[in-house]
Image (cartoon, rainbow over all chains, first blue to last red; front, top):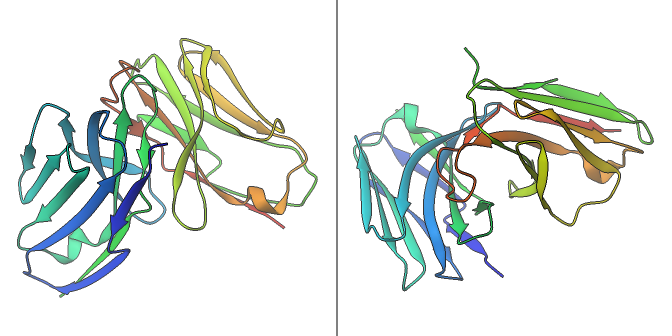
Length: 112
Length: 114
């Protein structure tokens, strides 16, 4: 059974810091992995999607890596800003299941 | 230009009542989903419909019944509400249901059962 774990559960950093959010999954048979952002009272916004054959994806200040064999992904946020404050969710799409399996998220607070 | 819209945004109701949450997408996606986010923030899939056909039905109480009148709508009806049903319910849609690509989520419905 696929399980997704995110560490840490919460993180508070001063503005300008580079930071890393971690995601691990128990079954390496995945089709892809996605990082989402969730703002309070709002839906989820897809940030980055990494296909199983890829090792990383970049979008602006965000970089996500994937190591399928070890069941790990990291989301790197460069030069963090207060506007980055949100909950970040990692989700894997296991092959042939048709559903995303989410971790419990990391709640990030970036202080001005 | 809301892509996936859910109504209502907030729902407070008493135990034992029956309630519905509506979802509509204007993206032309052929697959729609209901996810439940509990108090610990875990998001878990409940149902998935592809072109009005149920394709995923996770282990949820049969008090929960999805209905898809057409591929742009997926409603969730809940009978005999219980305290443990309190959660945030997210509707989502995607094209290419077998790839996990292109998910778009609604803003959620916060259900509180008192």
